[in-house]
Length: 348
Image (tube, helix red, strand yellow):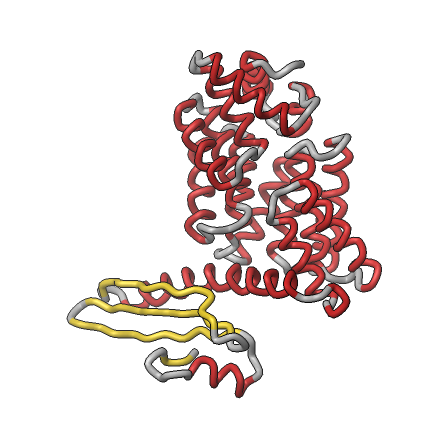
């Protein structure tokens, strides 16, 4: 940690210690208030990856310290990973280490495109042949398989879910202390309709790492499918607060979306879907939730137009396939959700 007021201090410390990233900052106080400014720097390029400023009262100095630490740590982890992903993408394939290959695969995965997702899986498979014992490799593969399933980029959603679960289990077997691996295994368990196991794994993941945005985001999805609207929204908001620019944020928001729909908050569900579609145009879960909510609000023309968009991106999608893709265990909730899609015009 370098003082920001020391010119070149962060870069000099990084070079001297041989570290790639340095967090620098300053603390100023006046009266009963304190201002903490922080900046994360890539020492190789002297480029600032992230910065923020926190203004707080000093009623409880320890609470202020804990809050700023939590927020800074939550931001630093994704920012450094984004930097590694971008660096791996810029390098020539032949010069990449196994870890950099995984980062390159994650760069492709986060494009949320069918071709990029397939490219990510091919990179991961190639890397696994050389170095199969990287937990993040298998956790990333699990996420790719779930992307393929949720966007109907595969022939059989149940097969894709099985591949995701197998990859997640491999990740946990390699590193049982990896909270992110526990979280992706918890998500895979949900798609297998093992909700108690899913919640246990995700609760454990967030207990081990209270700053794990994906853990809270996946909890939003599980509680959403269970019809626990308030808990879903709470966890989704926590995830977005921890990592507001995360590539997975549309998935977390889709968990909030199904919770809003099952809670009969159709207008809010549409608003949530519109935000997702601005971030990721054509996102399958957002379009499905939008179509179902429009149908329930008796807006048939808009609902039908949304179904046309769905089928243009996911040809052959049916209500029966959505039943396999979106695990809603309560029969009444499930039929309400699926019947809304029928009313919107999605074929059986």
